[in-house]
Amino acid sequence: KSATIPNVDGSVNRIEDDDEDDVVDLAANSLLNKLIRQSLVESSHRVEVLQKDPSSPLYSVKTFEELRLKEELLKGIYAMGFNRPSKIQEMALPMMLAHPPQNLIAQSQSGTGKTAAFVLAMLSRVNALKLFPQCLCLAPTYELALQTGRVVERMGKFCVDVQVMYAIRGNQIPRGTDVTKQIVIGTPGTVLDWCFKRKLIDLTKIRVFVLDEADVMIDTQGFADQSIRIQRALPSECQMLLFSATFEDSVWQFAERIIPDPNVIKLRKEELTLNNIRQYYVLCGNRKDKYQALCNIYGGITIGQAIIFCQTRRNAKWLTVEMMQDGHQVSLLSGELTVDQRASIIQRFRDGKEKVLITTNVCARGIDVKQVTIVVNFDLPVNQAEEPDYETYLHRIGRTGRFGKKGLAFNMIEVDKLPLLMKIQDHFNSSIKQLDPEDMDEIE
Ligand code: ADP
Image (spheres, rainbow, N blue to C red):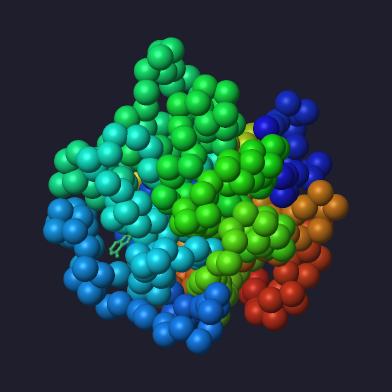
């Protein structure tokens, strides 16, 4: 399994060596995002477009009607509750549905409508009367493939003869049977196997090829090369589409290798800021002190819902038990849970079933609970070198400038960690005030 370890905790909070650190797993994060996403992510940025042929006119659409879709497809879109195209869809859909087909590389953060866009493209190009695979979508994991398949099923609800098949490990096709489903979604290894070894898919008949989550894909050993082998066998008139939430150089290099003559669409990510957040710190001696300070804050101000971040699973568990014993409604979100379990904890918290969510770094990104106005750093985020982890601090506490609400952040700091906090303050050039937990008047 490939994963990056962003913040291995320092020694101070580590009680025993078996205290496992939570690692960030890109595919799991992406799945979590999909499971908890309820609506489009807003953006105040303009969509940037780079056309393959800059002299051709650039179309954008404000309504789905303008796309002249099949009746049953339009019905499917409205049944999903979509009223108008998202920001990225306004530009991407006319290109994706153009005749002759155009290739596209599109990048925008998760939740901006990429999946819905390519599902629409696949459904609009598929011929329901032809019983063989015509659209092929590569995804990094089994679970992500299933999520995309669900969107195909929902959007294609009225396209009754169109069906989806999953090319994923464990999906056994008996010898001698043909794949008659028009849309195949799968992971690169299994798709490769189905195409070349088992000859279940004739790549020369594919009309739309989608490579989803390119950034997650290249993070997995072998997937980039397998995807390229599949792409090489596609006919030249096949439409090729690639999507990614992020766009580092490595993703870009891969995208350019696999998508010939592409149009490129990018939507910049909304920046997080600390501008609307009042930040405080409380000096504490040890863990018990920190807890006491937390209780004082709780007693001192009216708190709706709060998220508390700990650096290790062990600390998070300890704090959860302490708070529960004191009668608080608390839930614990940490890395040993499955993605489904995490999603359901976040959902319960969103629904207000618990007032406090205690979590570790693994969950710093991905939780976006709008009603939360209080964030507590029970431990400061630090990296392996025991330096402040600025990015994680920003992700825990920051809000997007235009859409974010005002908030409060409390840092529980052991005296010897104060220099780290000062570095954070300097880094962001924003003030973090000391708070006397016995005197909460300062805040309200
Ligand atoms: P991405 O692939 O960029 O993560 P999705 O296509 O999954 O984004 O869309 C994110 C969420 O927004 C999903 O819940 C999806 O159903 C919804 N959505 C997508 N397009 C629209 C639209 N045009 N109008 C309303 N909701 C949309």
